[in-house]
Amino acid sequence: MTSNHLKRDQLLATVAHDLRSPLAAIIGNAQLLLAEADTKQRPRLEAIRRAAERMDRLARDLLDRESLRSGRLTLQCQPHPIADLIDEALHQHKPLARGRSLLLELRLPADLPPVLIDRDRILQVLANLIGNAMRFSPSGGRVSVSARCDAEWVEVAVQDEGDGVPPDDLPHLFERAWRGQDPKGQGNGLGLSIAQGIVASHGGRIWVESDPGRGSTFFFTLPTV
Picture: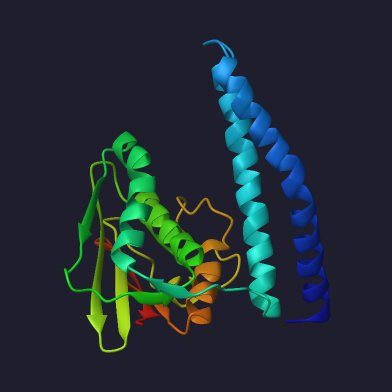
């Protein structure tokens, strides 16, 4: 990375940090107003809240990316049942899944060992992968999350029923700010790069297998206790 890129990333991280306090105020006040709003006011207040939350998500992504780049990402690793964490991540996505008539499927063996992880960071990885799988799956489709134990690792898989990843995009998926060719790729391009950094910080790895026209499966590994 060049000196100019480093300075740019540091500047973006500083701006993102400074933006989080006013954004929190906007989100908090919008929620308070929503509790008292009438039917005419609610759509506008909801739009304000959603826009502020998207900006806050971007700010957090920029801060995470800078922490990973500089090696300052702090992990608080403890033994945790991975099945509970996957179930929590799926539960968070159920309202959106219902709205798009998507089936969220969980396939886990009963004897999964606990993993040594920073719970919130791995929940962030799961949320990113499940959210991506839902975005690229057709209405009425299925998103499946499964896991298996392989010696000293637990391997988690998130599978969608979308169009798959174009072969030319596969080598670039985990690059910073990569959005690819698919018009549904409407994120900021940082999510998969951050997920890779978080998993790598745990000593694991993340990868994707995709069959154009038949969907994609993202895998990542975590160390067992």
